[in-house]
View 1: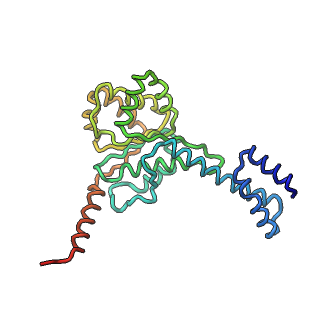
View 2 (view 1 turned 135 degrees about the vertical axis):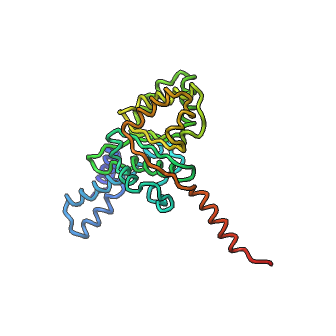
Length: 267
C-alpha cells in the first residue's frame, strides 16, 4: 500500500474513532498474511480487538465517574475470614441482575467485617458489565452517608438541589456507605430520604450499615421517617449479614503476635 493510501486510511480510522484498528491493523495484516487468513478473518480479528479496547475504556470511565475511594474486586475478598457472609448470594449479586430489576442490597454487620469491600466489589462488577452487545452499560455512584448529606445540604444552599437529585436519580446503582455512623439532624435526615424515595422502584441502592433496622431511628430521629424509608428500601431487597468479629482487628492481633514471637528472648 502506498504512503498516500496509508495516510488516508489512518485519517479515516481516526475520524471513525477506531483507535485499536489504527494501532493494530499493520501488525494484524502481517499475522493474517503469514497464516493465510482471508480478508473477513482479518476484519473479524480487528473488530474483536476494537470491541475489547472500547469496553476497557468504557469501564475506566465508569469507575472514574463512580468516585470509588479505592478500586476493589470481589476476587480479593477473604470470604473464609467472614464466614457469616453468604458468598453464593454475593456472587449472584455480582451478575448485576438485581440492578436490572431495580432491587436493593443492604450489607449489615459489625465494623471491620468487609462491608465496604463487598460494596466496592459489587460496584466494580456493575461498572464492568456490558461486554456483550446485548448488555446495556450500568452507571454507578459511590458516597458515604455523611458525604451525601453534606453534598445535598450544600446543593440546597446553592439552589442546585434539584439538579443534584436528578443526577442521583439517573444512576443505575447508588452505593451509600457507612449509614448509621453519625446521627443526622432533622434536615440532614429529610434530604437523603428524598433520594431514597425518588429511587424507589426506579434504581437500585446498596447500603452498608453497622446498625440493625430497629436502631435506624437513632440515625434519622423520627420513627415516621424511618418507617417510611425502611418500607421503600426493604420492599425489594437482598440482605447480606456480616456479623463476625472485625477482620481488621484480627489481622492486627495476628500481626502483633507474629512480631512478638519473632523477637529474641533476652531473658
